[in-house]
Amino acid sequence: MITSKPYSTAGSVVDQAAENAQDAIRSTQRTVNDALDGLHAKAAPVLSRISERSTDLARRAKESGYHLRDKAVTYSHATTDYIKTDPVKSVLIAAAAGAALMALVSLLSRPRDH
Image 1 (cartoon, helix red, strand yellow):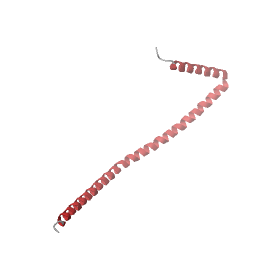
Image 2: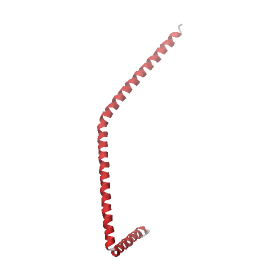
Image 3: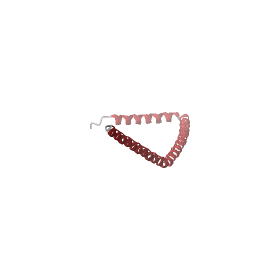
Image 4: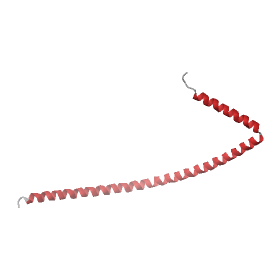
């Protein structure tokens, strides 16, 4: 029975080490949970402001889209009216714009070896 005593002492040392490890884990969990709670409390107002700003930005973008569409419709009607009142001049303007655009494309697409 003399040999059983070292085993029981070793067992209690292992049990004590396991208990200390569990205590350390619990303490770490509490610290992490407290830190996360604090972070959430600080982040909540920032996230709320970001949400408000993104909603406002989306609303303004939508309004700008409507405004742009209205302007495009207005210019489309004005162009159509101009073409109806002066078709020959409109065709000449379109041909000149097309020629200028082709000249620009030709100039930009040339090799730059010189």
